[in-house]
Amino acid sequence: MSSKPPPDDTLLAVSALFVILFAPVTSQYFIFLPWLRPLTPVSALVLGVFNILVGLLLANYAACYFTDPGKVSPGWEGVPDTCIGYRNQAHFIRFLLYATLAASLCIVLILARLTHLVHQAIRHTATAPPNAPHPEMVHVGQVLVMAGNLCVLVPVGSILGLLTYQQIYNLTQNLTTIEYVKLKDDAIGVYVPSNPYRLRHPSDNVRTVMGRDSPWWMWALYTLPPEGTGTWFEVDLEAE
Image (tube, rainbow, N blue to C red; front, top):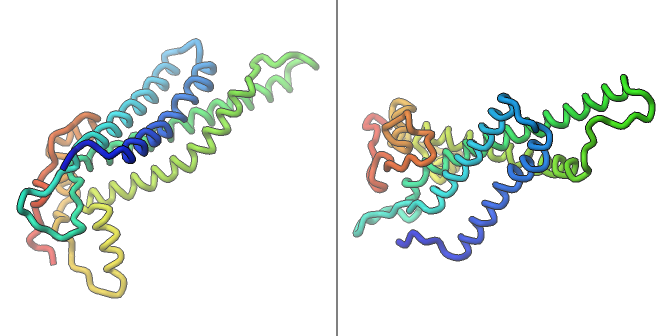
């Protein structure tokens, strides 16, 4: 199996990267920096955290894209719908988590900027003499960027949050998305046996995907392989 993606996948990846970067870059350039300059220690810390989150989500996106998802051993035969993306699953989970945090922080900062503008307008109306110029004029471009980015970030952030929750739940149950959907479909009106790969403790299930070194689970470039080989994983022998 070649690790180089086909051209269509490359175009899709570049398009996704553009969508991922558009809101953070435009928000920072047109909204946050004009508002927060000159930077104070607090504002620099907030922007630093925001940029770190964006950097971490980009690193994990790149890791998802370039990491060989894994393949079955030569001569091994399994069921046709076996999921073989076990090598980059940890990168994908980290990507979703950092993308959700970055989108949430971006929304909070935009709302904080809007709140600041409203308070400034109310104070100016209450205290300034008639026809006095507003102390903080906002360019129409900034307003359009704030409105447009909020329209994008709110639904995208909500979707990312739901995906992150679902992936973390699947992680604690040692399920892939395909297995989760299959179990839900099979559970309608029939008895479904326990998942033999769901170990007794959720932390054990997490280790099978994220690796044994828990302090490094959230590190963007943590590339040690997960537990198992892609065709063999530890099972709960007491599962029914």
